[in-house]
Amino acid sequence: MFDLLGTSLNVGAWQFLTIFLLVFALFMILAGIFTAYFGSGKSRTVGVALLVAGLVIGILSGYAYHLGWFGGSAVKGHLGALVWEAFLVIVAAVIGALVAVGIFLVAIMKS
View 1 (cartoon, one colour):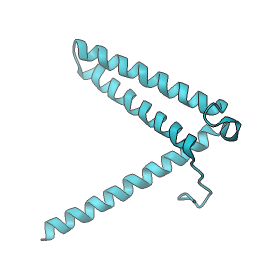
View 2: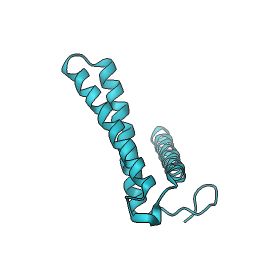
View 3: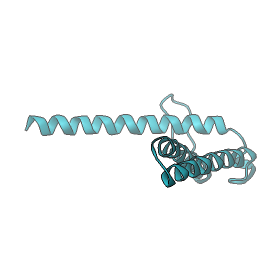
View 4: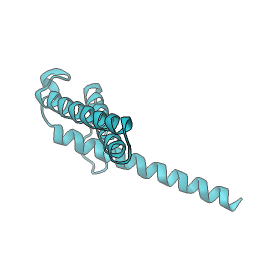
């Protein structure tokens, strides 16, 4: 398979797991920041817990992938390349979804 730039894109099960954990951690961090900033009382504490959990999960999953703990030495290192490939896949998915929603809205508005 090839990515948007025409280079080889090889995302296996361990890469999928790493991308899943990194995106999960990113959204936990964002939710934690949002909740800690806008919350009050217990919800602010929950926000800080989400923020810390997201940081820990993100750092540990990135470090584990870098050391080759996910899948052994076959996928050791290259975390930056994996994150770049994941970024391209996510951008392509968002663009595709926006185009589809735009076509849907134009079709609904015209009828």
